[in-house]
Length: 223
Image (cartoon, rainbow, N blue to C red):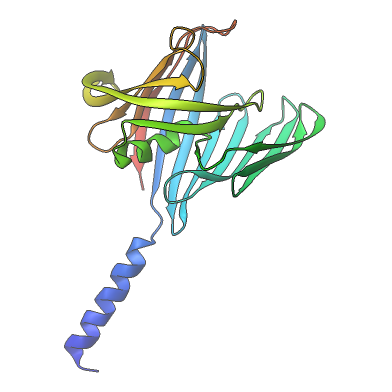
């Protein structure tokens, strides 16, 4: 093979391989519920078939999820030794089956999400919501504590600057609601960085005995 052709071929091969090279984003988020704060240490790694997100919290919780290229969840694992929970959920078509041990007892339940996306660790999937450019979207999520499934709706609102990590960051604000529930009963808001759709902050009101809560990005790095 001619040297120039060989060099070009090698360059194309290396370029193709680089598309599948794993890159990882590591973030820390503070989740405040009433007077309490839980620290979320989360990594999102790109793989050829999508993404893997891993969450460890300051109270000993572990979550791992596998997402497709649109950041919709395909598999989810959760462990909480203090609670006595060790469950796995797998999506096949429209059905998501959750099984394992929940609060020390055997557990199995199947949910039907239709053709909607499944955002489990929601902050890890919002980036795709932003990049898609849609102004209104619906998706499902399973409550990490109660294991109940809820269909959420997100609506793009306004662009504004918010204070994150000591800096004013240009962001896009979204309203987050529950399908079929009027906004006056429940309405949360989250902000994504305008530059790349990175999750910055979410604020949720007090509801059904649960105090007001907020989760905010406090550090990030890629490697």
